[in-house]
Length: 187
Image (cartoon, rainbow, N blue to C red; front, side, top):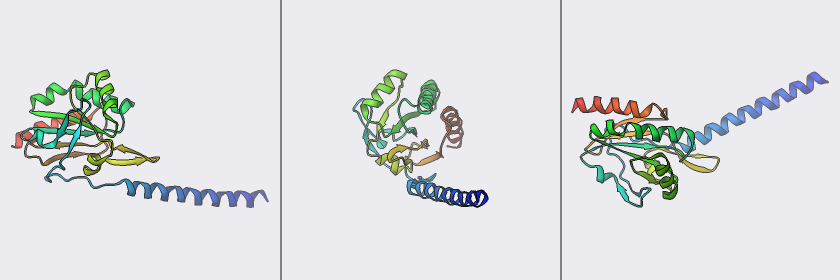
């Protein structure tokens, strides 16, 4: 009797596991929006930053732009990434580039985050997720919209020059600096 019960329980567990895999796959597919490709015109945006200033992609025409998406203010990985960009901002600016962060947090959350960590660059308040979605960087986790940790280098002509997907929060700024140098040596 115990053996039959164990076999039945194993079958139920196997079915539940397969169902879980299917649900996770469907959720991942539903969250996948298309990333812009290298060479493609960067999607336009016009959205407020943490200071209530309207930021537009066209404001950066003629400059390199590092547009990085992150899930949530004041979380460990996002704080690490923002502070790494802060610490490397002079190197990035020396390369003629600006840094802009984007998450689905509101402007007041961004203002507190920027003040607390002395962030010298705009943080876009993408509350509706429209910018994140247009850059293929929106996802839903347990019913909440979040930005994916993706980074885009946009060239002075407004085209996507490099795409980083699901980046390492602490390493990405160094990768971006190396790539900016490489890209600029080709121009």
